[in-house]
Structure formats: structure tokens, C-alpha cells
Image (tube, rainbow, N blue to C red; front, side, top):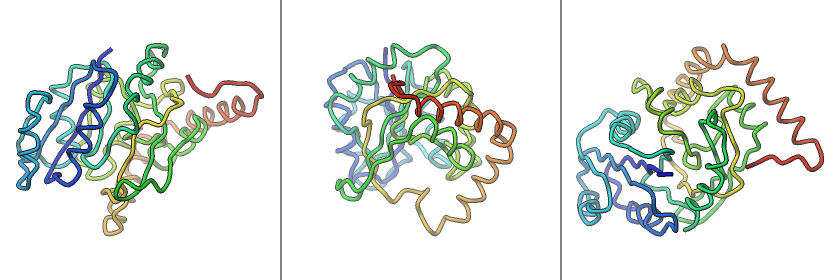
Length: 249
């Protein structure tokens, strides 16, 4: 099994080295790092040049993060992909090893497998996003249910659906909303990544844009699936209430 770690960069010198080193330190070695750089003008190109023999790099202008991710997907060749922001990093050196041990046991119909996501500022952990399957399906009714930087997605699924570049903030929600089904999400009992707070989705100045984009996704893709999402939420809620019932793989 090969992992594709996809990183979009734009003037990201502040924490890019930390992000890359968290990948280089992984015990599991069958991975590729696909970096799509938006012609950065700070120290980012120098850092990427330093690691050019260890990454699949392309630098060119793009129209936003979803355009950059699509460009990276065109070059990716793994089985499962994960998207790390340049400010993000893997939570530990054995994340890919642990993920591999669990992903190989999943049925072919599973498209998304998510773990826990640490959040904070300046590498200081301030919180954790750790959702059950029931929570994921419920939250899909209003926003993306799983924590995207801690979610592995089958590359074939990503290439099938891709990202709609007309979105600035909710493109990941849109892609997931189009792909989510009753039985294609799995929870991984491990902490996958750390995400630095302060991204586009949490920018207060972009609140109205974020809200309007989410409403667009809900109207277009979530409402037709609302009954399925709610029924699946209730099914998982029932399983979680049963003593001894496993809630993860």
C-alpha cells in the first residue's frame, strides 16, 4: 500500500520544514510527497529545493487550494491520500504504520478513513477533534463531518470526484458530500495529525463566504442524501450504545 501525502504551498516558509520532517520521520516508508506550490515568493522555494529529491514538486500559479490539490492529484500514484496544510504535521512517527495496519482490513467500499486531529497554535495543542461515526454522519447535515487533515481517502475516489474549484473554502465539504454513502466511512482509533488554527475556514472576515458556500453544498448535495445521513447516524448511535460493540477498525 502506498500513501500520497499532498501539500499545497504558498509563501509557507514559516512551518513547511516542520510539516515535511513529520513525513520524513515516518516508520512506514512506502509513501510519496506531492507538493503543489503557487509560485511562492518567500523562502518556500529554497526549502522545497533542499528536499527536491524526496518530493514530487511542481510550482505554478493556481486559482486556490482546490485547484492546487487537483493539480497534485493528477500526479499522485498512491492507494490512499491525505492532505496536509503546510502548517500541519503528522502527530507521531508511526502514524502511517498504524494507518496501514488498519486500512488493509477495510472493505473495498470504504472511501474515507479518519482519525483524531489535534489543534492548537504555535505547536501548542489546545484541543482535539475526535468524532464517532454517529457524529460524523450527523455533522454532514451542516458541514463536513470528518477532520480532513486527519482523513485518508482512496485516491481513486478523489480522482473520480475531484474538487470543485468554484469554491474557496468549502470545496472539501463539496467533494465529500458528493462521495459520502451509508457505508463508505470508517473511523481509525489513532491520532493522525496536528493542525494549526487560523486557516481559511476559521477566518472571521470570510464567515459570510464560508456560510454561503456551505449552504450551496447542503442544497445541492446534502438535502438529496439527508434521509440516508440521518438514518445512518441513528444506526451508529444504536451500535455505540450497545455494550462491547466495537466502534472502530
